[in-house]
Length: 231
Image (cartoon, rainbow, N blue to C red; front, side, top):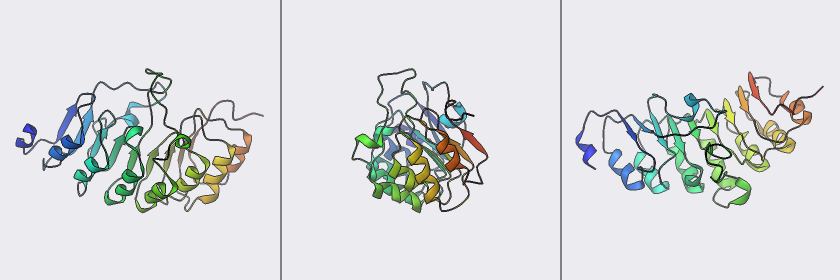
């Protein structure tokens, strides 16, 4: 609350776990604030720091290490937020339905970087094992202009929903859930040909998926498990 007395503060870096719904309410009253970063981060070795943190970017809110809800995020409505980073435990239908109110949102990052990395005991988010996210919640993303999306635990139906995002250019769906049927659903449901970058590391895919991906003529970068492509 005391920080609201700094009218020209543009960027703030907070330690792990400091951000709460109440804290977001205070931060929303700082007129010049353009970025909220988290420090003390641990990154999975396969991820580039440039894509797993604000890394100096403007209009970026990093809430992965806080405890926030849809109510807390409502404080940010009306602000110029281009990059939003959440931990997977904060993600639910209510949050997804709120995202269309962020008209400038370009990046939504909800990957669980700690899974099988620095903290193997951390839960890996899996849409199969929760009712917090439904097809209706994912459908709300179609009313956003999100270009870059990082999610894991994507089911076949979830991939079909994401394939309908007409502004999506990059999808990082690392994990161990996606299969050949999921890729077919993504390709079949695509509304546009804007998808250029697709990362599928860790998933169980075969040459069937590669054949399906040939239908996305706009694809410029593809990252798949090494065992996927064979002679």
